[in-house]
Length: 132
Image 1: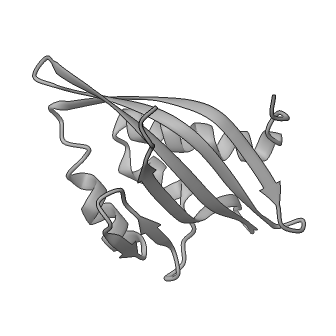
Image 2 (image 1 turned 180 degrees about the vertical axis):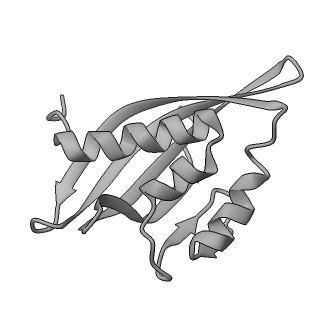
């Protein structure tokens, strides 16, 4: 069984999930690094660099008619010194649109940096989980 996540790292992960489920772009922006080197790799192979590209991509997923629920599984954190680290995890996302639900299995890795405002996501890689 993996060790519990450090409190600050668990808070970043929780804030990421809560912002997505609430479809709150400002809260989501607050968990990402405010830097032009922010990069997100999506499951469709698209790569976004900087918050504006990330925001533009994710706005399509956060449409009002889409309800999102995320469940995190197997989170693991590897520190890289005192101010950086990598968080990997599996997650299940349930999308409901007009009463029709789809459940997707995903894998994620986050590079996290501690900066003046606290811990932030510097890079995020999302991929489709292998089928069992």
